[in-house]
Image 1 (cartoon, rainbow, N blue to C red):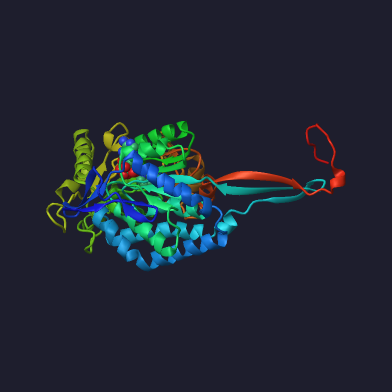
Image 2 (tube, protein in one colour; image 1 turned 90 degrees about the vertical axis):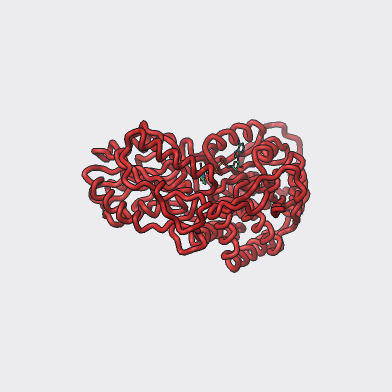
Length: 497
Ligand code: NAD
C-alpha cells in the first residue's frame, strides 16, 4: 500500500484515512511514490478553525518573539535544505542544484520577513492639531491562504507565508497536488522552529479545496500562483466573496536581441533561461526576438550549446531533468508537432532525446524552432516546457510591438551593448519584470515579484513592501489627552487649529 500524504492542521498530520487520494509520481522513473489526500470542505473548515483560534494569540505575540521564530526557521532551513532539495527533485524532477537554488531564493524572503519590526513601523505626527497627535499602524488580516503551482513547490509558497506570518497572520497553504511533500516538510520545520500550532497549516487537494478556500467566510485573503485561466477564476471568485486577492498567472517571456549584443553572452543566457528546469519556470525565456541581421549567427551559437545539454535523472550529474507528469510531457511534445505542422523550422528536435535515466521517465529534450510567426500556437500559447522559438524582426520597433501585443506580461529581457536602447526598452515595454542583459530578472526579496496584463490579477505583487501591504490593513489613530477643563459640547465638524 502506497504511503499517504495527509494535511497539516493544528500542528499535526491528519487525513491519512481520506476517502479520495491522488497518486504522486517520480518523474524520472515514472514510478508511483505516494498517494496524497484530497481535502473535503470539512478539512478546509478544520484548518480555518485551527488558524482562527491561533490568530487571537499570534497577532499579539511580540514582534521580538515573532522575529526569533522566523530567524530560527531560517537557520533550520539553511542547515537542512539538501533534504528539501531531494524531496523537490523526487516529485518535480528538476536537477538537485536547481532545487537548492529555488530554496535559496525562497529563503531570501524569510530573511526579508525577519526584518518585520522595521517593515511594520507606521508614521507619527505630533501636534497635527493643537495637542492632537496622529499616527498610523498596520494590522494583520487574520486567516489568509496561499494556493501554489507545481513548478516551485518550496519557493513560491515562501513568496507569501514568511511575510504573512511575520505580519501576524495565520496561514493555510494549498500546494500543488503534483508535488505536495515540500509543503509538509516546511510545516514540520515551522514546528521545530517554535511556531505555535495552527499558525501554519497545509491542506492538500484540488479544485474542491480551492473552492472551499474561495468560499470560506473566515479566510480574508488569497495569494494564488498558477496558470492564467485558474488565476482569473480565483481572482473573480475570491473578490466576489469579499477577499483580498493577488493572483499571479502564466507567462510567455520574450528576449529581444539587438544586433550589437555580445552573442556569446546572449547565447548562454538564452540556453540557460530557456531550458533550465526543463522550461517549467514562469520566468523562462520562451521566445527570442532577433533583430536582423543577428538571427543566423545567434541560432548557430545556441544550437552548438544545446548539443552539450545533458538530460537525465536530476539526482545525477545532469543539466535538465524530466517534465513533471506524463500528460504534461505529451502536451509539450504535441506543441513541437504543431510547430512543425504550422511551418516553423525545427532546428533542434527534443523528441529525439537520449536521456541518462530510466525508460519510464517523462523525457523531452530541448527544442529550438526558427522562423516562428505570431499566429502559430508555439508562439501564442504558454508551452511550459523546453521549447524555444526564434521570431525574426527587422527593427527594434517591430520587436517592441510584438512583445507589447502579447497578452502575457510577466518577464522580458533585452540583450544589447547600447545603454540608450536599453533605457528606451525599460520605458516602453509593457511587462512587469525587465532584465537588461539579465535573462531571468526575478526581483530580490525586498523588491516585489509580479507581472502585468494576463500574468497578474489584483493590485499587489508578491513579497517586498507590497507583500507587507497585502497582508496588513492600515489604521490611522487621532489622539489627544486634554485637561478636563477643555471639555464641552460642540457639534461642528472637527477642524484643525
Ligand atoms: P495550475 O493552474 O494547474 O495549478 C495551480 C494551482 O491551482 C494548484 O494548486 C492546483 O491544484 C490549482 N488548480 C488546478 N486546477 C484548478 C481548478 N480547475 N480550479 C481551482 N484550482 C485549480 O498551474 P500549474 O500547472 O501547477 O503551474 C504552472 C503554471 O503556473 C504556469 O502557467 C506558470 O506560468 C504559472 N506560474 C506563474 C508564476 C508567476 O509568478 N506568475 C510562478 C510560477 C508558476
